[in-house]
Image (cartoon, rainbow, N blue to C red; front, side, top):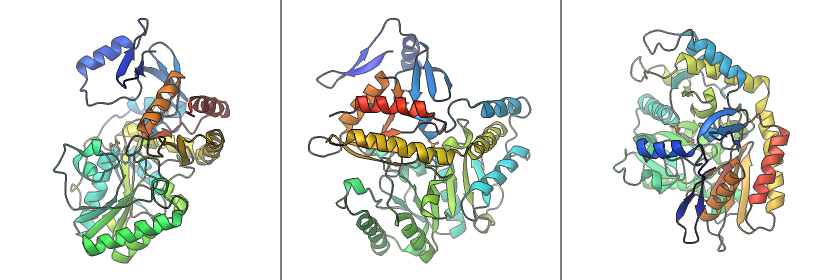
Length: 444
Ligand SMILES: Cc1ncc(COP(=O)(O)O)c(C=O)c1O
């Protein structure tokens, strides 16, 4: 493997093995690919199966990134592969020229599994596109202009989705002006708040802040939607304490605001329920999903209620590729496996196992400030010697894991969190093996 090592003076150095078969591809990538495209691990994936990715050398990496919470069934699940292969030979594309069966079947299935009364589906291609569609719908149906979002959120990289995003300045800076009419409220990041030992006080403060927003910045009757992640993903794997989402639901109902819940990263059994908002018993007015929906084929959705979509007349929103028959076939197979194999429960059980093991090993290590999560969405937050967020420690930990053939990702507003997002089909032995590596790589 060719790896990146840190020299004492903090410069990055490429440690090259001359026999590394990844290397020619890495060099050609540097020559031809736009440098804005970031990759976390300097390995070239050649194939993948189940919980493992194999590079050009044939080396196996245990995948605790899942293509950023996408391959919830593991890589190339046979049921998904078969569905895609059959569909690709039958019908690949229609766009909005004709109807097709898979779109209708998938819409019906999504209505069946979506929380509460959601019963009207629009399919798109990416998370950002679905977020934008949801906001367009909210503005159209309410006739109101403003949107409330939360600090630390990530909703995508297209300009409106980016305007809703503040997980890291790096994503936003140099792209101003961004679309306006967006008002930021605060998210209960308990660990970095002054209420570390009092989560409900942290929630109360955030809800008070939202109330102040309505007195100081925007009239609530001008607000079309509140958009929120039920667990902040890119922002640092931050699980809001009980009461926060319920509080937002109450505020939304009070002022006739639509509650848009972004389940792009949390959806499809990842957190131990099909959708994370179910943990709080909160029903969205519009729910956005993508990532794991089609096991890696590009597909996203926003799901709403007919009373919200009924006046959105044909053609006011659309997409050439959204709801492609092959992607829909992959999604139908994915949801069938999630349900038949009860993978939500498996995620809950494995998540508890991993968190317990890691917390035990981290006890007494000052540099590991917090280990948190829900199901198989787990964050490890690193502190420097002053207790401040430590990007360096998180990156060094991720790099050590990579050298031990375990793929993990970082997140958080300063890159201080390592996130663990394994497939929900992970075996007990694979979970044990990953924990061994993670514990071995922990700093003092
Ligand atoms: C919560 C959330 N919303 C939206 C997005 C954007 O999705 P995409 O990258 O498919 O546009 C992401 C991507 O990480 C996400 O985590």
